[in-house]
Image (tube, rainbow, N blue to C red; front, side):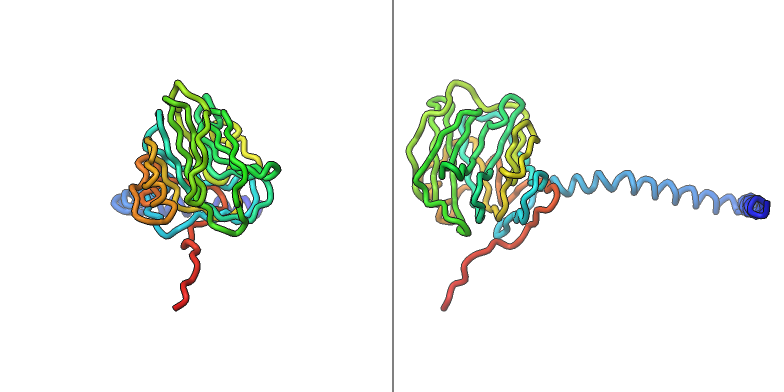
Length: 263
């Protein structure tokens, strides 16, 4: 009974205060409340816009510090139809198991363009529209930066890998049709389905940098320039110097680790 009487007294005081307030004061309070609601509604939109705006990551790297089935970086390509393609990237890891290096999926092919290290067979794999090509005999050392480029031509069906400045043999993969459809490009996780199906034991742990993608086949000289970190034409589909991306979970952007030069 005492609590009820106290609550009733507080309500009566609120009603009296409201009645005695200046109309302009009530209007001002109402406007402030509306502005606060608008800020709450606009915040997610502002965050999304910031996440999608291009960033210059020159001299930077993505660090994937732990094994998970969630942490990844989603990249935004400038187009979604490819008759020819080149993808280049650098990676640094000490993993002694299978792991993903680059994963691009469309609704029709989870492995539209995939670069994958198979630890059991000690081979680097290129998948084009779910068709696998294997490359063995590579010096894939742990705790070392490795530069890898992949090219594919739908007219000939030929795929070729470049590894640390050396071109590997061309192999027939698949020909006759483009890679097309809503494109999802993921770093750090391997897509077993369009945009998902991640497996912790195929995830990437380490550092990744200098990811570029072109809608044409780079010349050997351009690829060598990329491998040697010299001047080259940046990607027109993915450009590390103007990259649109979204980070999910624990992935860090850090200064790229380089060896110190002694005088």
